[in-house]
Image 1 (spheres, rainbow, N blue to C red):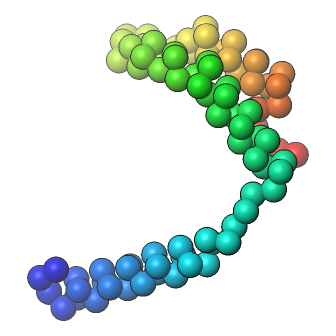
Image 2 (cartoon, rainbow, N blue to C red):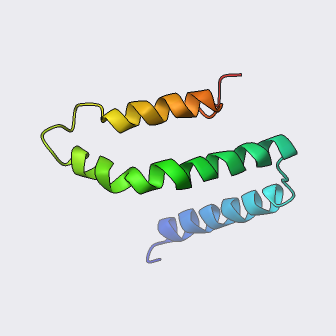
Image 3 (cartoon, helix red, strand yellow):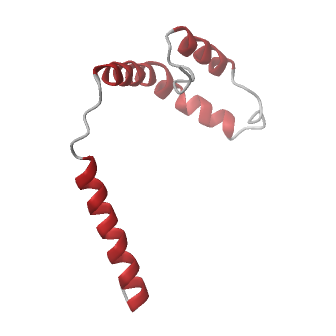
Length: 89
């Protein structure tokens, strides 16, 4: 990489990355987590991704600091199906 310090740093980073992969390769999510992930992915594919260009347009406009009406509707929908504030039990 050009210098002994950089070589040492990158070698250490590579070792940590390898150790992390080795330590986590046996991780298997629970059935509850898999079901939640599937519901979340479906929600994203059905409602969020199709609106990305609209949200991007608003973010680039003079209305960028206002909440898009569809954003509020999607938030309420996510709440109603248990996909809002997932970290709160």
